[in-house]
Length: 536
Image (tube, rainbow, N blue to C red):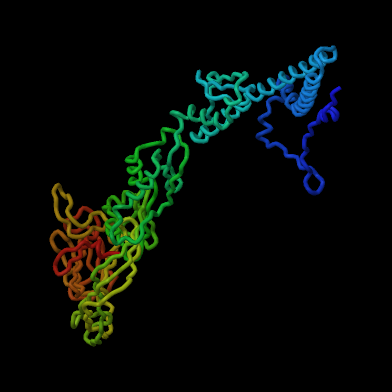
């Protein structure tokens, strides 16, 4: 007999599977699947999938057994080839090997089928197949995620119509199954069309102004808004308001063209602008400084007494404020006037407080570099960086009075001659059916109200004068003469020296008058002036 080879003596070799070694310390670390991976096991509630899961777990053992049997079959075939043909024992071995070979092929075919195919769910929306994912639960999670995203963008609840969605679970190639994220992308593209768009939004002080889909367009628009305030001497330019451009998803109706956004930026919104009255302010000057007429300023402050301004009063200047206010710093180069000094010489022929120019001073000139801060077009701050004198200033010499001032000497300022309401202003007016020029103001009050001198001086007229009725004129010896008309009685005579605030007459309605009032005029070198420009 032919001796058996070494393989036959020793029997088939067993295939051993190497086990992973335990880490140092003696404990084996097992990796727990992440929450996302555990969610991707829909087999846990499906009998067919549970069977497949069991078979998948047994595959390493089946492969090991199959390898051993195939090795035994191979050895048996080699033994038969070495023996004489015929014999019952050889036939039985051949049949035994064929059975195991067939079983191995079946298992191999099943393994290949399992690798290539899987059970998955195809999602259809509005008749169009979107994608195939591992399970219906994954598909529903994708729909929920997209619904939430659209709801956040439009600021209200958004829900997909259930009638447009269908799910189909079937056997399919593993390569056709996509991740949940890919389904979300396909759903987002499908559902957002006509509802939400990705773009760039402009906010000013957290208020939405407008949006565009073009990247960089809003930054360019903000730069263009500041162009009118920029020059070759601009140091810096910015906006008073906080502004921000956000990349985000927005409802399609929020997107506008850039021209509309620019128009809104250059417009105004509701908001009060006030002015606090300071020393020396008068109504007409405040109005003029803010590009208003006196009537427009009064319309913004109804019921305000324009003749009784008090320091600290707040006047409403505007009911609207701009969306954007440019603040810029400019370097300015110019020739500035340098003020001259004044030198005083005592003069005992003049009253205390009075001065007279002996020799006029003259402004100097200097080449100046200044850093100027503007808010819009209004100058906020000016800092002189450097000055180079080109012409020295000339000192002015003035005589200063040392003679004690009498009580009746003029102070140079006027007070109100009486109390009451202004019934007629300075300028042209309609009266007695015609138009005439009114050379003063009329202050109305009850019969007999005190009328006093607006400033110290000498009475140069105290009698009846035509349409003035009983009239007092005071020469303040500085070029100014004041008139007090329509009095009921006079308390001074020509040549009297009167002090500021002295009682000189009583109110009445004499002459050309329609009621009790004091007609008050201010004349300088014989020319009528508007008294409102002199009264506090």
